[in-house]
Length: 90
Image (cartoon, rainbow, N blue to C red; front, side, top):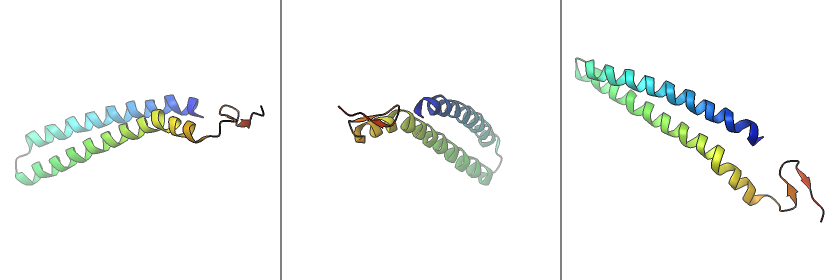
């Protein structure tokens, strides 16, 4: 299962990261071109929210690709073959 999810999650990371960076650039331009304070505040809030969303997405992808398999490995029975899910009788 992890062999299938691994490249998919990194592809999602690339797409979300690229979209987030493009949106952050657009918001930065809107922030620079804003004429009144209310538009600047609105753009600033959206920019901060976008950056937080990108960081959370990256953290979740790294968690599920790197840390989650290690957590599962630590709590599985030693007699269980992780690839087949079959107990090995020794």
